[in-house]
Image 1 (cartoon, rainbow, N blue to C red):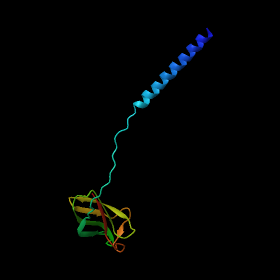
Image 2: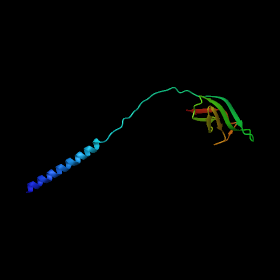
Image 3: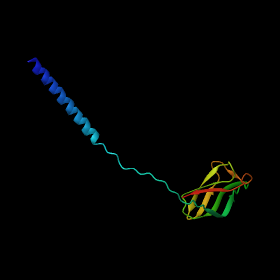
Image 4: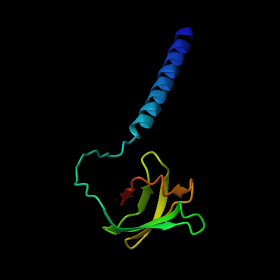
Length: 124
């Protein structure tokens, strides 16, 4: 009888181990990895052309510059910013079909004396 109990325990333990092993295999067999892509390419970066630049002075304090306006080509730009001096504040602009206007009053009021260059940055 002892031998029979040992055989039964062994058989039960072996069956349980086989069952657990098959469950673990079934779980790992169901994992999937989606296809992925990677690549590289290049394209020409072309610049924008700003023309017809106009500065608007503050009517009360004409040494301050209130705005800058210009025409940009090509007109398909979603972001335009200007800077009136190297290291100075950047000003956000609006582009309406190539007509760009930039308020130069915030974050810091631009002054005519400090305006030494016009830098335009545009992105599509």
